[in-house]
Image (tube, rainbow, N blue to C red; front, side, top):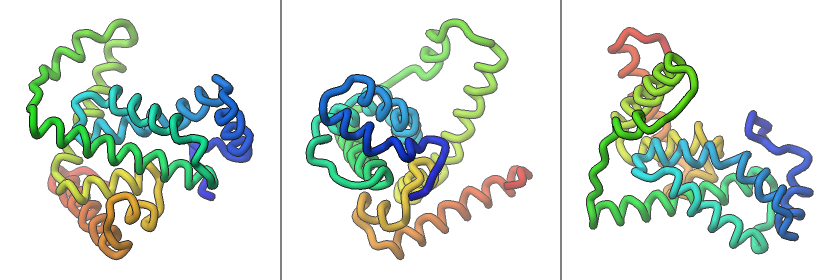
Length: 189
């Protein structure tokens, strides 16, 4: 199993068992571990309501928890399979009923904090969105699932319904596109 900054680690089996038994603290721990990454994934996929998508994902996760078996990495893959489907569902809904949103309104509604730090964070988020927007939908999907969700090529292939070779090619093309964009801008990658 890959250990990373969002990994529960050795406590995973105990936390999973407690969540299955209905322990609120265990639900909170599973949510706290993956919700920020799921929310970031939804946001970078263009979700207009990433918090809602994240909530829908975890409603699905917690409802299906009793049927899940596997390791922490398999759990992570399962969560992102649900996230992929929720983001796809939102895209379909949006294509049938386009939603307009004033992006600046979100910034105005934020309260408190360090203004300089908040402004720099917002600029960073916008930059990541711009870079991701330059990728094809398939490339963005694969790059985000591989890097942000920390899933293997095989796990991503299973989620998006493509072969492992196709996932590797999409990842390579996506990363090359990002590298070319950064090179054009004079940013070292």
